[in-house]
Image (cartoon, one colour):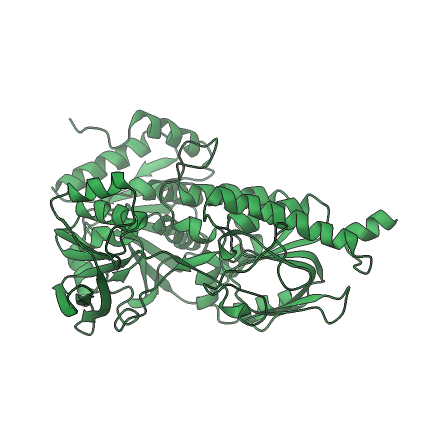
Length: 535
């Protein structure tokens, strides 16, 4: 007898979710005699047993990936496929596929649903993922929703570890990797709005035009990570006109796997925390403008005037006060070959891309906590890990250093200055480094390089506009105020000495309160709050 694919807790949760089905859903399994096929058959049977609206349908498996399954709407004919077992991080993607094919409403803007429904043409998406990737589910769920909305769109999730020949043939070395109609479409995290914008060429111009028509804000937050979300909530609670503009909600936290130091929450994951943050912000009257990048900030021309924010799309926004919460991004090596092979062997997310290097040799550049943690995680997947640290000692915590030293397939090289990422034109084949002790150049043959050398603040667009440190951090005072009147800053983009989620949230609140106090003390600023008080 087959052991169940779902434990009792997942079975109970799934049974509760399936009560929300409105229309019948068909499940089709394409299997052979392999162990994974047996597991998939067990999963399909368990799901069908939980709801009378879920039916198992047989179909010819010729030309199908084995094992794989299809979720099909009996009402619309929409098809969503999973090649492999959608468990781990992708179990939620399976649950949502069942609900959406069964007529359960989607939690996305009606305008976006209508835009997807009106897309003209046939769009066949294939997404390569790893089940340990925390970034992949967002992309999978976005494409699945598109397939559920528009029958001309199909999507298949492919577990790269299970279909290694396809991964090798398509030279996939980073996940998620998305193909559209057999052509490479995107790599890494991409939102539903971004996917639609790439397909619907007129979408970006329309969104820019809509933004251009918006009235002035009282407080405009640039960035939607923990600091930005906190600032927006504190601002909105003051009853003033508040907006958030960002390329994506969550920022760097979306790439964080485990969070165990967020006080009162013993353990959570980055994407889960971000979902809660966004839900909290949306409880208030905050205008959220996603998929937008700020290119410049222009100071008010006079006391009491409006600060102007220019976007890469060409649109402009104005506000009485601005909070910069643009966070930070992964610091790069800035050596030859790094950009050429980014996504083709050079990566930054071990949990996302690590499984693609199973049985191969890789390097981790950086000997701090993130670098040593990455090496330990990789050691359980790959054949060998070489850690390269620029300094003459590791900077990680002692407990991590001991674990790394006790791991047989991890080698640590100190005083190593990475000088070049080497490849064959399509993928990484090695790395060169300078032995700073001997002055001799060394070469390592390997398949992947994971860069873990810290973060750099996202302040490129305000160079020369707002006072920064030599490291590019925004200089702020105890209220979060910057050198530009009416502009405040919060989170990892500032001189705050400790880059922690909980500290970023606190600094977001501080900056919002500081900006509100600035507006209240400036009689020339006619904001929503000052006008209501005057009345």
